[in-house]
Structures are given as C-alpha cells and as structure tokens.
Image (cartoon, rainbow, N blue to C red; front, top):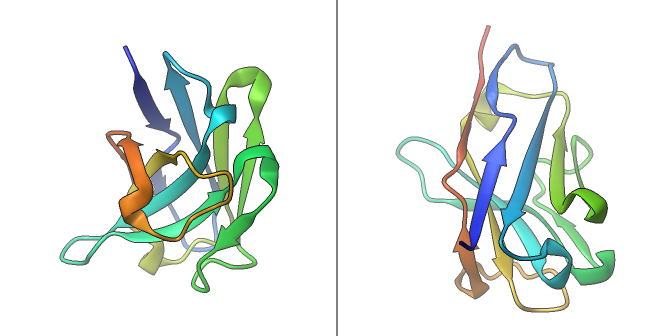
Amino acid sequence: QVQLVESGGGLVQPGGSLRLSCTANGFTLEDYSIGWFRQAPGKEREQVSCIGRGDGTIYYADSVKGRFSISRDNGKNTVSLQMNSLKPEDTAVYYCATAGQFYCSIFESLYHNWGQGTQVTVSS
C-alpha cells in the first residue's frame, strides 16, 4: 500500500524545537521531490518547505527561513523538517506530500500523495 506518514508533532513552548518526519510505505521517497505544508485553523494550507530529487533544490517560505531545515535520509526513506525557534504562529497541522518533478515545486497542484498530517502546537 502506497502511503505517506508524518510523525514528530506535539506541544512545544515558544522558542522550542521539533523534528517532523515524513516516511513512505510502499515506494521510495528518493524518486520524488517532497513538500512540507501546514494548515492552521481557519486558514488556507500553505507550503513551508520543499526539497527536490537529488537535493538539487530547496525552498523555504519567508516565514520559516532561517528557522526550519529540510533534509533527506534515503537509508531510512525519510524526509525530515527540523523546526527551531518555534513561534505560536507556527501552530498548524503539518503535511508532507510528493511531486514527480525533479526540482522542488511551489505549486501545490503538482503534489499528489499526501500524508494524514501531524499536529504542531506552540504555546506557553
């Protein structure tokens, strides 16, 4: 069964860190560019970061640049999102998704497989 699974979410205080993981079952993440997205209550889903195949391109939204870092571990078939200096406005459900393009894409419509999401709450 082809499936993406996110993990690593939770409750953290402002200024804290979390590491999200996106793991694939039934296929190889190395063959896809991977995007991380988030959706806060009452807001539209937005892209946070993405990484192209072969790590050729990496993108960060301005709101997370310098605080978040995306990386691959092909041996574990996982893409991670390291989130540091978290702010209350980072609170959202975080999703990973795959796209067939070689380069990282900022167009959400190009992402086809989606995980179920993991909740991140930043609060004191």
